[in-house]
Image 1 (cartoon, each protein chain N blue to C red):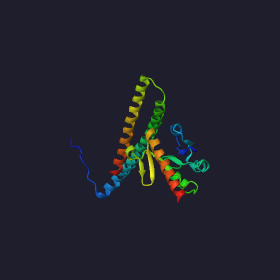
Image 2: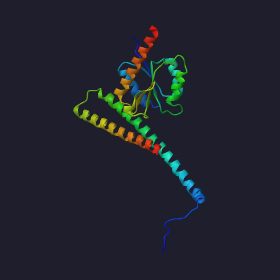
Image 3: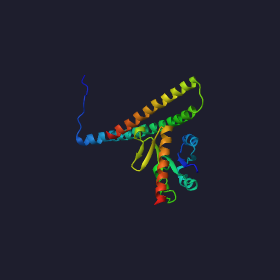
Image 4: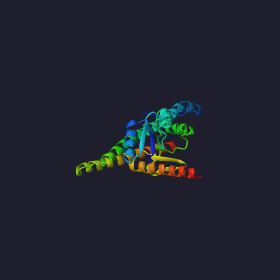
Amino acid sequence: MRTTSHILLSPEELDEDIQPLVDFKTVSTVESRGAAESIAHDLNNVLSLIAMATELLGFRELGPEEQRFLGIIEDGITRGHGISRRLFDLVKWAGAQ
Amino acid sequence: MNQPKILIVDDDSRISSLMRIILARVGYDVREENRPFAALATAQEFRPDLVLLDVDMPGKDGGMVAAELASDPAIAGTPFIFVTSLVKGNEAGMRGAVRFVSKPVEPALLLAAVEEAISQSTVSVQAKNTR
């Protein structure tokens, strides 16, 4: 049995058939970039809250174990910041393509 | 001497209240405004020495609020610091005449930027007064 590996289309047909797909892809890309940027913004706001609250906790006298927990939180903030940076870089990269 | 006054304009009250506590701890007189459309009225009443402006706010973004404040001759000379995710930590600082603090907000960097903006503003006011 033969299977069809490709279909021949005239340029007019190609434009007509492909354009909606191109439009959809463009809209999807723009929307994805907007969504990624929005997620990075929200993540940064959450990280800001944690970073500032952690700083204020640091002014209190904490025991060694609490200090260790504080260190874990600070490490989490740094890692979260790395994720948001990667998201922003991805958005910039996608915009440049 | 009166403590320098700082107005924080941020639609997220949790962020503005933590910023207020951090800045008040080192002696600044801080006011929060969580409604960007009310920033001008609050600034006219509070007369801040510095405004911390969130960039990404619904309805009226930080740039629009800055333009509105700059249009009032009584507030026009007040320095701003924009607080934004759009610059990375190592890109923050002065860009042209505009100062930025990047999000997530690092308290030490926030305090350093505020101190620098206030001291430069004081120097420029003193220079203007001695002319």
